[in-house]
Length: 281
Image 1: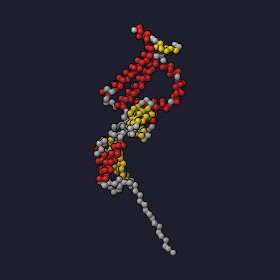
Image 2: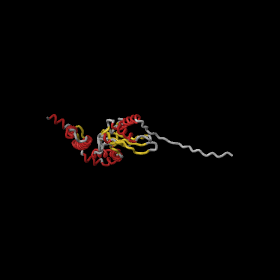
Image 3: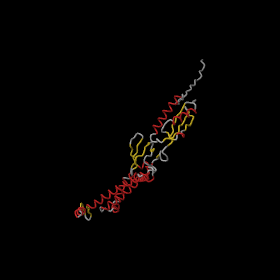
């Protein structure tokens, strides 16, 4: 025990009245290890059976907020354990922090936005978002940036402030299925009822369509060169909806061909007006 006490009391560094002993470093390390263990236990607790019914995005947000709070407290205690007064450190570096803050204003904006996203939970892991015309699926929400995957399977790093300050469409916020539409125009003279029937049958024939009784075909307009229709349907495959629409369009084309229905194309009639000829003298 005497040897251990001597080792712990061994002075590694000293500057004036301040000194760092082995015991302080051991305490510092134990605080960090304890923090890791506490966070691991919290993560295990949140993934327990009683939390299975909770939305995974909500559980993730709760854990992230707890993790940041625990780390701030742990680092403050760890610094105090080695003799560094956090309050004095912050007060002494106030002017420096103001200067740094001006230079890193956007970074702080992103961090505040990250805290808002995690606390508000308006955006969660797995949500499909439309940000500035780019459709992405959120994979991770960090304190400064969020990681997402676009429809080309390319990872995108998004500053959190872009999500909180831009107009964002959350396709999966209220429900795990969303209504989509396909537009098509057919030639004038086509059987309207038959066209609507084919559109609805084409959607119901596709496996990724949800609520097949709510599939609906509509005659929406008398266009310049076509009768315009909309096919409305629900799908849970929100992120890969482009493929779903493509496959349904292929079915529609096939059924139109079988029933001699022509998909319209722009047409222009030109009328030539001839001038009356003057009598010859």
